[in-house]
Image 1: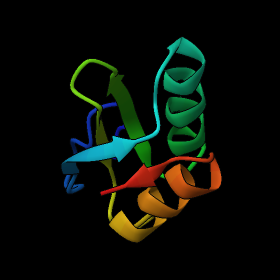
Image 2: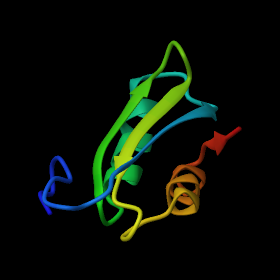
Image 3: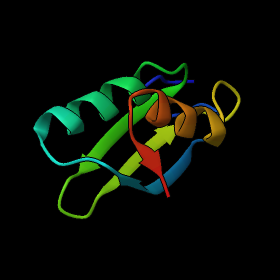
Length: 79
């Protein structure tokens, strides 16, 4: 499976989560870095204005709970 797109038979889960506590570009970078560090994560993008995180990941390598835990451990809360 391609690491970037999940082609060649892989399944990619795409989620949009609301995250509380993000107020600046440092917050944005911290959340994105934490989620991107998870195995199988292809993309993690924060929209500060909307207070959302969009993540694309391989569910055989990381779960939605793993993504939520990474956000929590970075100091923010998924609601």
